[in-house]
Image (cartoon, rainbow, N blue to C red; front, top):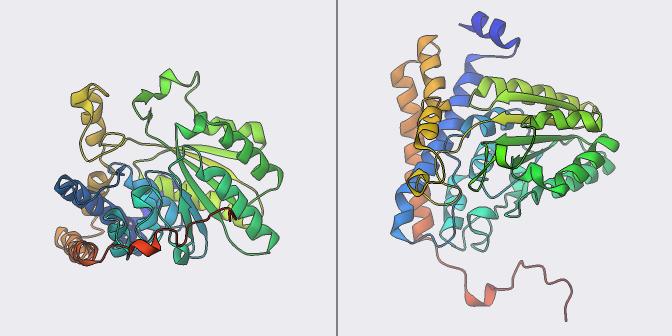
Length: 337
């Protein structure tokens, strides 16, 4: 098993423990998001949700290369990144319910997640908004002499924004320890990549800034892990930023718990094609085929995650809402009198 994988991916770091971690992280994200799908129609969650189902291999492959103290910046579709980086389910779920026990004290909703303990300094709902913030954090950690790498997740829509080019240019100029991860799911809301970009090879942009760029199958968690390992190692050694383009596909609509093909936003045949390439299903089949784990061992992981998820939902629903006098607490006022 191991020798075949080593030969295929050109790595010498694949272990059974790592493969189990990859599966566990991906399944944890999938089950969390699927529970949100189940609960959202109850209308107790008042915030919009942008779900990560179908893209789990990217968060898992990248974050398993990061240390707890490394920084992570994300976007409106950031639940999976936070879970992969180590965020607890309880505070994350409570945030969706607007509860005081939420990771952003019930004021951020699903698009504005903060988990400083795990290096998550904030996710941004502004398209491309997290990119300059991440580069700024990398500059700060470099000036302080800290051994931190900053990972920035964004979509192909953010690649259209000028903030990406300005931030990447600065990161390359200063050789900052940043890994830019573009999760190319081909759609900016409902606009296909081919309608927005004359060339569809996002990773090639790195060459313009004398930086490293690579395009990988974003549904192949080991391929993502390898590319991320190379990029994180380069960044930590002072080699500057890298751009990873991971091609993938989101199953749900741009926002909400439903699929959007019935509304004419995407062809159903396209969605069906990508569902056949489900990163979790393909990886599970590989683990079974290569005798890495048995079906019962895989099911045990799922059962354990279900218990964690059940507890998180109870915690979220039973937690109190913030008091009215906390409305302006923890909110930056800009020094206004």
